[in-house]
Length: 290
Image (cartoon, rainbow, N blue to C red):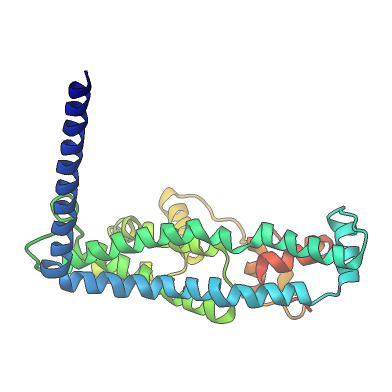
């Protein structure tokens, strides 16, 4: 009985050792592919990934801290207690207690952890997209995607245009400390839809398909949505009604970019702006609290 059990254990150990050896050989083959035949493409993937990810990481590491301190230190503890009682219906016993609750509220709703999933998703998208482009523009004999998926020159141009716009937008947001998880997700959406959007619109617009795909990729998403609606109305024969005007633009000191930031938070009228929660609006829009 004991010898039978010992034999079974030896067989299990031998099987696991065999699987471990095979796994090690697979990992080594991948490393060899990336290090030798895929070397130039690997450098391209690393550079393009870092260009897109570093502005986000800089904001999460540095910019978020400054914005957090700007919001939490802009009003005194007594004012925080009044705000919590009036807008959040939270009663505090002392100013120090109000400060603790206020900071906890900010970290729960707008803490760094909310950036984790968008950063992971962005990393996957940019690595996959850049590796596809690298295989499409190089003549490497060994490929990861080419046997299953390859990009045409128009698709590469569309991805390049959207990548240029997203990187530029992320760098600008990091510099002015205006980042949110939703902004990262919109950038991901812009990258994902660039190829089908460029190819579909390029097929109905006369001219060079590659240039049109690249140019469409370089437009902001809101501009593309407006253009798509107008083009769809024209193709379907619908009449485009009057364009709705944002009444916030009637206020002194509010320009179009600021009105768009407020509109993203569902503030599109003067009445909404007058009766909204000012602290929450400041937290959500990353505007300075004055």
